[in-house]
Length: 292
Length: 125
Image (tube, rainbow over all chains, first blue to last red; front, side):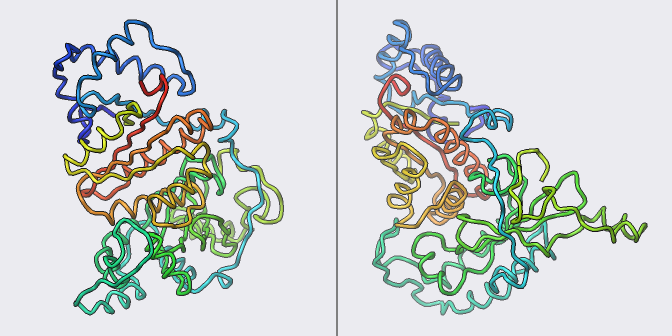
């Protein structure tokens, strides 16, 4: 990303590039930034001492307000290969618990049905959200909650009010990318390949999660995008990404595969091969091979 | 884009951000030298005591929190980041990846999220 395209205050200030009172010119600042960039992007762990020239530039630059001379680092996302090279970021190898659709809790089961019917575009507001929003009485809308938080006690919106105010957010985040940053799902950690769908918060957990800023609760459905294959696979979490279960009887045919199956019905009856070569939850499966 | 500055200018940084009307989420990384410490610290200091299980949990909580705060710009200021830099570089890189990804995922039009690291040592000089 070109820093000049960024709108943050720090970067906007940086673009002014004006000389400061201490004599550090825009060129000096740019040179200092380049040196820091090189050191950090090249290897954040390196702690090489600056050259005398770099130190002098930095010393002069420190007379400038901090936001004007902030060292802006271009963040270049690691490639999947680089991530794999790092031991800590290597794909996990584990078995995945699997559940049948009927074993999911009611909110997750409903969200799965909705997600399968609307896999890429937000559906109309689901019944639970419409119902909850209607509970907002239009009055006060705020209740006292002594739990800690940025809003402070006494200024939390009621749950119906919050959902009313954020129902657009709920819809915008429907089918948003899930990057698998924690690496608990198959695939290279942080490489994505999943779409995420919010489900209704579980009644018992809703209030605690709501107070803890997770106001859309902890229930999520995920679709594993199998770019080269013919099927989509579905996962669920009920504990805000701490663990995932494979939904064993929810696998769906991609539209192209459906069309092909119509043309050749016999092929569609062939047994589905598991995405990982063995049924999830039964065998430890290496998941870093690149294909889900 | 990540912004880096020396730890002893943290007050200047937060002051200037406040002057510009930027909402600041301040994480004191004094006790953060690995991912588990990061999740515990953000849960306590930023998310009002919420349990943050892992990076996916953090990303989701952060995105909703920034939207919830409103405003046009939010700065995630990670102070004493040198502890994570030296304690677990790989997880610091993941943190930066998660934060920049979250910044790009915010609704448009909507709030802008920027990341600031402050710390001690040559990396932050």
